[in-house]
Image (cartoon, helix red, strand yellow):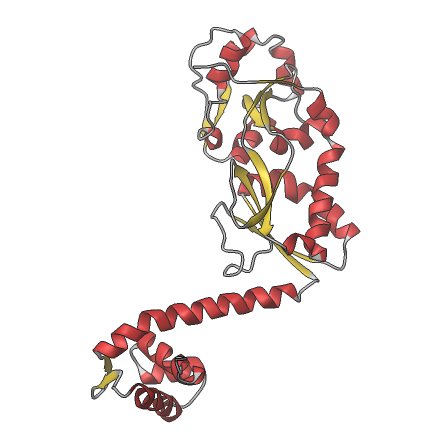
Length: 312
């Protein structure tokens, strides 16, 4: 026997009233009169054959039946709204919303966006700098760039270039520290954003892999990679820079890597979007543009000797 559900408008009126515990506020939300909202709820109660609210003088309370229905009614409308937003996005070929971490946004995306805008003036590009894992439909996001290991079930996931870390510094500091051993006397900037990588790719690991006995690094510590790189650009010290975040500075000479012995991270940046969405014109255009931009600095990556971190 097929379950005969009540009208959607009546359920929607109930959901709003149950969330607000007020017919007046629910009516305001739905842009209807309180009388119209009350009529919808009364019709729902008649459909059920039991009251859903206890009407008090200036308030309402849910009955047992109302408390049983309210959570699932709210969840159903939230899920329906999520699906509707996702359906709407499939029809939008002129805007693109991308989320990426603050460091990647600052060091990789922002310096290159003018080029994308020049090549694709028809696409309205929006950015959200965040490390929070997004719900693509709920958050109205098309593409997420995330750093880590994956896996990413249910998503189209394209690993970008292999990531590594290497000591980078200003050209002036490179003159003061001509050998890997001399770095033991330098100010070593600590980037806390790579602490999660296993095996470790910190200064201790780099020196150990190079066969250098070095004291523990005690320089300034930053939780955000872009802040650590900015300190290196200011000449504060030397940082183990991640490929994606320092490669433009290396290509343009603001930073140098005089000791091109880089530690593999294992973790990578991934281009993420809902499965099937990768073929949407603006998403495909953005993906291909990113891959082309990565290719522009591939010669610097090829100049590095990639090493596995030595066991601790």
